[in-house]
Image (cartoon, rainbow, N blue to C red; front, side):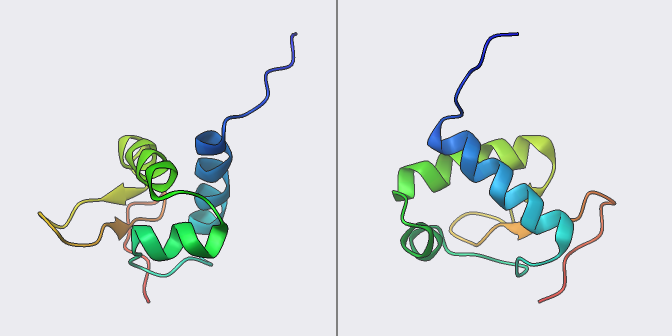
Amino acid sequence: KPFHPLSAVDQLVAYLREGIIAGTLSQTYLVHKLGKELGVSPKTVVAAVAKLKHEGFLKDQGARKKSLIVKPTGEKVSS
């Protein structure tokens, strides 16, 4: 099987997914703050968040609001 290096977005998705499953991420996040903390651009965070929403790990709370982190069981992660 050929080796395919992961993009920055895919690496961030894996990192965030692990944090959600382990319960080490807080209930809400700020894209710019998270990008700065992890040393990646806000665009990379936005793309990773979109993938995690598609996978069901994050849910929108409405326009201009933070996304809600959801455990794989469907329950909200407490802050």
